[in-house]
Image (tube, rainbow, N blue to C red):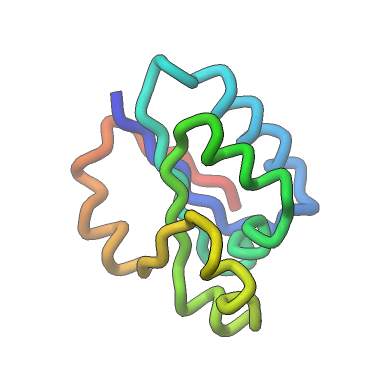
Length: 102
């Protein structure tokens, strides 16, 4: 099963723990992709977000949102994949489930 999480909420929201726990519980049971956009891009500046990569989660972010928030350069060196809202939603049919956190 392929699952997409679309995250636009800031990392101070209640969603942070939910997303992390869902990823942990789905490890080995589903292919998880997370797309961070808007204020969700701030998640990538937190050290804890690197744990998503350790869980095998594919982490994609909206480069335009990251650039607008002045964090693009600081996250480029990470293993996070830059993309755009247009590209991710063009590929949305590849996913069996889509869960939004906003």
